[in-house]
Image 1 (cartoon, rainbow, N blue to C red):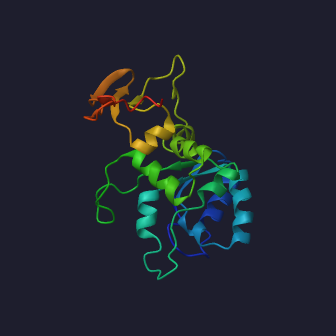
Image 2 (image 1 turned 120 degrees about the vertical axis):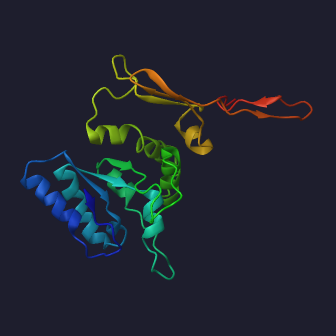
Image 3 (image 1 turned 60 degrees about the vertical axis):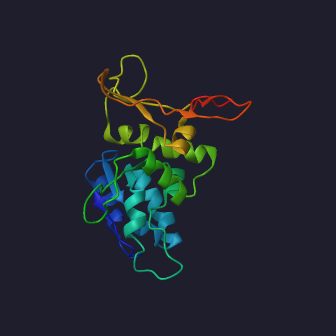
Length: 217
């Protein structure tokens, strides 16, 4: 549910959402999108709000590209970053996914639908540049949203649906750092899109003739 997309520290919509999720027995089936008012809320109030969300099983979706563009626009300085409290939500055991939100509309005309760009922006805004933090941001555009949506057959285990994107990278952090080329897109095991591998050629004496972006040695 679109919720608390404002800079108002007194907004209480996410608290209401969590309260009704519990009252209606909807634990684990409710997600709040944006939740940007949390970046302005009093820390003491947030310390009470996070356990309420966790108890109600309310997940969160931050939208880094849009949140940092629209929120805090009328601030002078210091200027608020605008995104919800991703590290604190994760520490409370609340699933956090990243979304793109606007792609090409009056609010944001620079969207590409690139979820690696979304994850990379999210980790910078949330200052999640540790190894674990970057992996959590990669999960926020892959496994975590699939879990929030309750998708069946998601993943790489035998018997899964084989809906996947093959990246030209050795690991998730490299994928984020390089905005890795999407080599293949598969739907139910069938290739629906393909891109050539990125190759950088070198002309330096004593150096390799090309760069292998999957080789970390």
